[in-house]
Amino acid sequence: MSQDNPGFDTLLDELPPHLADEDLPLAEAPVAAPRPRRDFAQMLRKIPVTLTLEVGSADITLDQVMALQHDSVVELDAVAGTPLVIKVNGTPIGRAEVVVAGENYGLRVIELADLDLLSIDAPN
Image 1 (tube, rainbow, N blue to C red):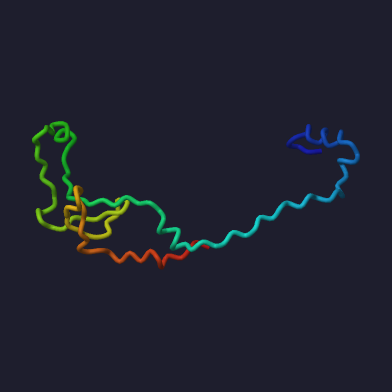
Image 2: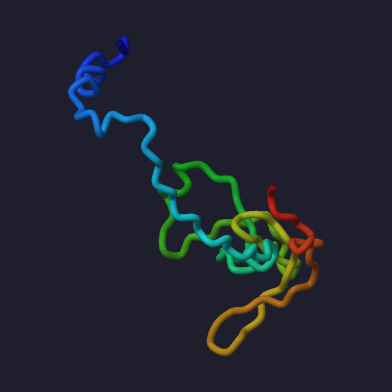
């Protein structure tokens, strides 16, 4: 008798003899067709990321933030005219300069880290 669930044993004892037969053949589960293995590098290429161009930053107090007004100026740690940091999902990957692309701002890549994502192997 089961210590965990004595009611289960009672249910088994009440089964009709033709259902309690342990020699009944088990139904074979349908076997799914093997899926073709996808190219891991190709899958990586489709992951959406956010590309940002960081002008600079400043460490200020919350009090200084609360004092900001319409014409306030906050000095950043970047020197004017130096290349800006390109980030992908917050991770620096290179440097660029701002350009005008149509009616929008764009960036011209000046320096790029060696991003060899294609050499990454799929996990086993």
